Image (cartoon, rainbow, N blue to C red):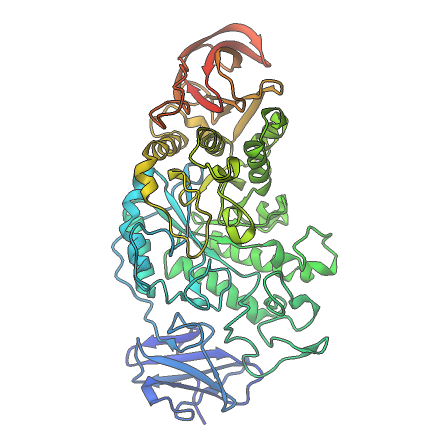
Length: 604
């Protein structure tokens, strides 16, 4: 009889002199491990059944880098669900040593009120054509660019193993294995290490709302499954009834009702934070983890998956807060559900932030309206001042994301959406940068999608590389984004209010399409910030607005500066003095100059 392993852990666990293997297979009759260490023998290393539906064995002589698979019931060859690397999505697993020679051991994520996120797809971001398996290295080489831009967090689209070499990453075949087309586990760790050297955090996108739907070794993993509606279902890792279907495939929703499946997902989340030293996680489509149809149904509704998906997310967030509270978790829930970012102690899911789809859709609609008179300034006011509760950082604000600029979704980049076929026109540049100004001055954590800062108009896709010639052609637009980022991060210690929670949209001019708002953290010189945004195609030599404090106010940013683009009007937006006299509900007022489709930022 085989002897159970004396080592703890799941998957392939290297130890001095060998490797331990442990796998969950409750309905298996026999389990063996075959690999390069035993010439792929189906019988040489049987696993012992443990008391808790798990199987394990120690294999002396096995070592890191060797390939392996499980053989279940003598004829089911399965990739280890917890394999850290695979030859490909339908190939073999590799034994991986988790140890890595880190250079940076003292990095901490930037405070969330200073965080600026750059969404990145590993395959399409690098500035030079890059061979497969060298992509993580290529991104690491380009980190100087992101540091120069001023972002301090990158959001990597999912980088777990997926079928083939081209994907956004949202069709995970093996959630523990690093995508083999991008590089090896150590190369991803080296990318994180290099980012930390540049003082840049790395946030990993994780997909737990569905698996696959293709190349799933966990499908009917140990031979057991049920039938529903005349179809064979997925077995132990999946729901085996009406709850299994998702928008991303049939029969591929993990069974959150099984404790071992929840453990599988929870351990994966912590793997990225512990072994890869990621600084946060962005959870894809959390509304489909908590609800079959992604809705905000009442808690007692059967579509809410009996609360198991909700409790899984709470468990993960509680564990992260208990051990690594400085690391951020972000939900893509898309239902404007404040409970997602409510603390677990108050019944919420415990996420630190969530994507604000309402902000995106509203602002994008205002920017892309053809006629000025169609631009709704009250809608602009609503998105500026309505985060998810009192904590402004409970939302991530953006005008572009991978989903919203992908041709396969029928979407376009913002400049192309503003002026189709003429994304480099004056109008497209002016209105898209005005939208960027709102992202960096509204309460919330700002995010941009790769290429926004160089006026990229090629839609996002897994084979559409960024057009880096635009970096030279639109260097001024890059400078505009860099200036906004530095003001948002209070680099010059005179725009501290942009990091704060407080906002007052005190001026809404529906006729002339002008909005003014006040941002502050604690208030006072260097803290109070006044932002004026002109959504109309006209200039103002002297536009009167309220101010929160009297005295001299400096223009820190004018998006109409012709240093950003030669065809910008360089309208004079002068420093001004605020004096006594009530205006817009404020005690003081002053006059400002502002160009068409422009934003100015003022502080004392």
